[in-house]
Length: 259
Image (cartoon, rainbow, N blue to C red):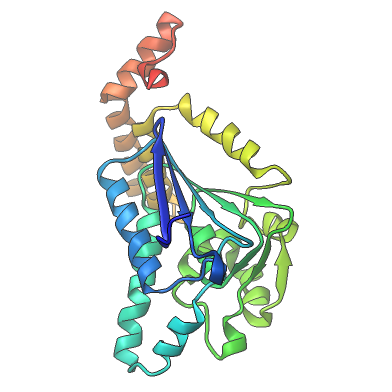
């Protein structure tokens, strides 16, 4: 196995991105954060049909690397802010990736690893997955990951898990919306999602992802209603929209199912 902190392969339009620091349970440091950011920036420019994000070894991601945290302990507040923004940028780049990002969570998913899961679009957790927002044990807060985690689990659940730093299992993660499916065969769920994504229009999925980001939590106003009308009008006039309607009327498969 390569010593690279991140493994990236693309096959049949599906990218597989694998955290590859099993000796530290795939904990983040500045090198892994930079590699993830660079990889997903590339996907923004040239999106695959989907990205499958997983981790090698005993756990998905153990949060911050101890050696990295030790270095941060000697930094100034300004240096720590700049470092935190690198993690935030990485999560934002994953969150805004124009293709679906599927996370496969197993073993320990701690701290920033929970943020990584929350930034993904679809998440399957193995039965052995264990989650923890452990920052307050260290006198810290999960501030950088909080926009993504709060969106996934809501403020009420966060009040418990942010405050107590308790470990919780896959079923609790499912109940609060952090993961979508719990499975003893997560790759079967990944395969089912990838099969479903083969039948949908990639541009429409990217547009739907942007629609969710722009509309979720926004009051229904004339401006919002106008925005949604603009969005559907643009999709109807797009090449994908025209091809989808033509395929439906002709009772044939649309072109995107062939790629």
